[in-house]
Amino acid sequence: MNLIETISEKTLIADGAMGTMLHARGIGFDKCFDELNLTNPAAVADIHREYIEAGAELIITNTFSANRYKLSKHGLEDDVVEINRAGVELAKRIVSASFKDVLIAGDVGPLGVRIAPYGRVKLEEARAAFVEQIRALAEAGADLIVIETMSDIYEIQEAIKAAKETCSLPVIASVTFTRDDRTLLGDSPVKVAHRIADAGADVIGVNCSGGPSQLLRILKQMRQAVPNGKFWVKPNAGWPEQVGGRIMYPADAEYFGDYALSFREAGANIVGGCCGTTPQHIASMKKALESTRVDSNAEVMVLPVDEDSAEQEEQPTQLAQRLSDGKFSVCVEMDPPRGLSTHKLLAGASLLYDSGADVINVADSPMARMRMSAWAVCDVVQRTIGVETTLHFPTRGRNLLRVQGDLLAAHAIGLRNVFVVMGDPTSIGDYPEATDNYDLVPSGLIKLIKQGFNMGVDHSGTSIGQPTNFFVGAALNLCPQDVDAEVKNLHRKIKAGADFFLTQPIYRVDDGPKLIEAYEAKHGKLNKPILAGILPLVSAKHANFLHNEVPGVFIPDEARKRIESAGENGAKVGVQLAVELIQGIKSWAGGIYIMPQFHRYDMISEIIVAVKE
Image 1 (cartoon, rainbow, N blue to C red):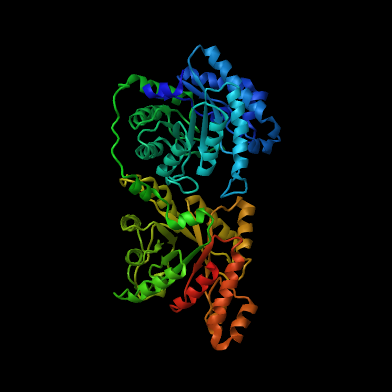
Image 2 (spheres, rainbow, N blue to C red; image 1 turned 180 degrees about the horizontal axis):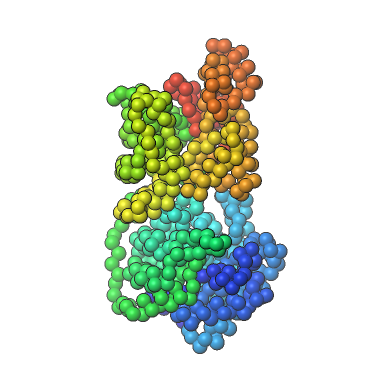
């Protein structure tokens, strides 16, 4: 059976999860599943056989992690060829015994290491590892190569190149996405589809990610981007949940059968299942597709799409892209005006932007004082100055209705970066008698945005028409009195989906590493960018006030002595201190979040120019 000819005539059924089925047989996730091709081939063979009996017309070899980088974790890096060859030969024996025409795809997964430009592994080193595995799969007799569950465009491009250089087999290249329909590095389905097609893959794929609903949405975007392409879809059985110590997936077989038809109608040429799926899911998809056949010669209409506008709509924010690219980012906070005039604010924003600020953060009613709406200020700044903004979004004073309505309004006027905070209590502001009730704490609001709105549903699960594309920040205190409590809050926000963190002002280089170490000791690597709070000192009086009266702020004696000795030149020394601090934190911070004092935007401009040089 020829893959390309076959999928040009009908939608092909692929198999489901291998790891899920092996784990169900009592094999722990800490084991090397690929080694089972040698040590327990019967277990792997049984799973292949069950999928073929369920109706799979394409099975994938048990070689997902059989590259030298991942195998080295089990001391098996010298067994790459043997394990991959065994995986293909095992699948071939089962296909032969089934007396069915079934294609065998040599499975290639991610290397498990970061490659350039986001990691230390060079592109040529990554390609060499892929060549080694793919050559073994091809020489053993695989019918095609499937490169799957990739999240890095650079990595999948090297894998495709390796396949094209090593063999003449058809190549399927498949990417996985996060809950916000972006890869881990922030790439959209449109961009991914274009890159995979341009790299020379024969079939463009999406797998793993969330359940069928999300992958149907992504498939449609990919097909609009590459109308003449061929597509592969293998969703998880929904988002995983941990129940009684086991990983469980909610989507049942019947649900997958319904979506098989939707996938075909959307242009999928190959459908199957990923994590959590079983032979029952594949059998349901097979039954659904066979019960409702389509004319193979009929043309499927694809609505024309302005690819430039689609790509622009799906792009991550500039802040998200900079942080993803590892570029040190400069954000500056500005307060909305107390009246109608925005002239001074725009003049300040223009100065900051011209000096090199990447983002303007707009506070919402700081110190609970009445000011112009932060959304309006963000909108005016973005339209007038052309610089991206981040909207501060306090939960205090908003019930669930207002929170969600405000989010829709913010997205409608083009705001994408949102900084979620609790907000200042009204008791300290202009209207102490005003109510400040709220339904959500910051972690709850983060979850609503990232796991609700960015998935296309509101708090009740009702569709909002299309997903939002918010990039969500959260607050972090690097100098807390209770480190354990702060670490707990940080972890809660990360689990909710926070994309980045803005901190309270710091004045010591080692404040960040101390809290990061405390977090990583309990929860593992902290892989979210931190924008360290920088509040420049303008005088000795200012420094003493912050040090003695503002909770969580500690200014070292040396810094206070330097600014005190400066006398009337305190602001100049404040700039020097800020620049020195920023240079010192670049080793661990993804950027800075500068908070101007007394509207001294001239000071901030000096600092930005100095650190950008």
